[in-house]
Length: 172
Image (cartoon, rainbow, N blue to C red; front, side):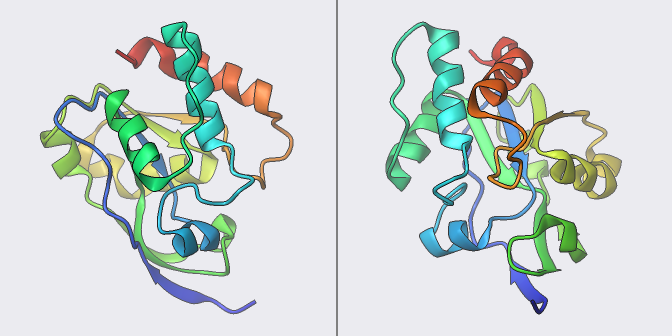
């Protein structure tokens, strides 16, 4: 597979009430095709977030399906999302192939919200954050296990438990 130069196609999702920021590495090929974050049908991000909100709030949270439902879900729960990488060369959706990376500038999100904690969705996002963003922000990051289908060792229930344990205290 050949390298392709990718420029991040999505704007960050946040507002002034956002209290946590979850950063991925870069949208996958499927996400770019669908036009929104975590668009691969096997990515468990939306299922995990709905389950965490259910646990935190003690109510039934449906897994958001449409882009508008996903955007509304995030904002209603004071969650901001974006990705560490603004542009890079990558083979398909393989985070391990990323080279020539340029980071997104998250200072606007931090200044325009009430972000208390930054989380990385996966080790690669955490590593890239520490390399490219932390030197400027000095904001610590908590690395969560990736919701990607490539992280098959983590079953859904285990992901939900780990995410809930790490982020529940920072959710309003």
